[in-house]
Length: 137
Image (cartoon, rainbow, N blue to C red; front, side, top):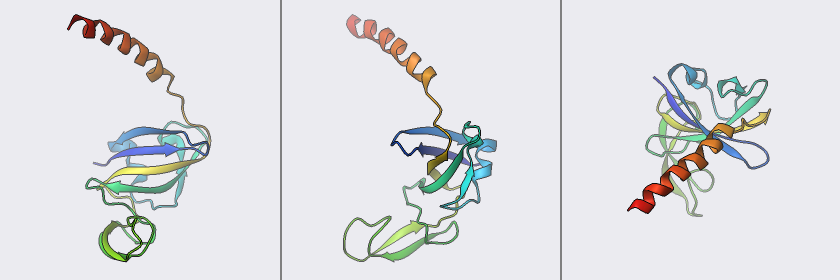
């Protein structure tokens, strides 16, 4: 079954990460880079997500101009997967989301990011509980 780590950012520069497993990840399988999908997958009602990129389990980046969900060696001069100015042959994954993809980068086109109030409230409590443990050592 598919398992993705979604990195969702908005236009203000804020981002959150969310893991999708099994049934929650199935709507993303088969979509391509640049596709706009419904954001109800991550819990944002009425929002839309645009897939902007990603990488597989080995860290191979996805590239929008390589078709399909395949891994290919392509000759790159600039762009995704090549930081130098020299032309180099690199291993790149195609633009289709498959089950081998580990991380998906998305942009929130409509709607607002969900707040992490529960996680922020639990963090100070966990830090306060950890402080006495440190003093005992």
